[in-house]
Length: 115
Image 1 (cartoon, rainbow, N blue to C red):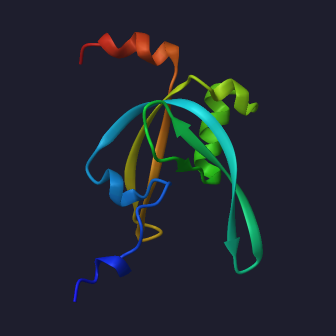
Image 2 (cartoon, one colour):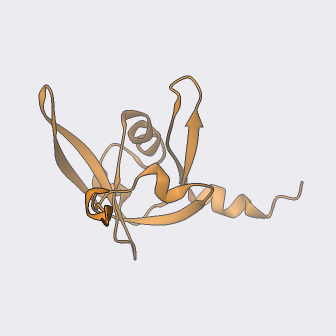
């Protein structure tokens, strides 16, 4: 019996498995708030959409703080900004999670630094 129908659907949100061993530079096209059902009720989280990409990235508090630090607290200011996204294994938690690094204009200019 073909069991792929029980393996879960392709979702609209990125998962760490989508990025294994990869790094992507993306541009934010939208910020939306999404609701998730939890044992404690409903939880609202920000999610980023990217130019030319189908899936969105749901932000955790750490990644949200990093984006605020770089681009400001107003989500409207995030539109058009560039991010580097990869997956990092967090040994202390025993699992993988997203590492989001904003790419600021100053960092883009510094790309020619010889090492």
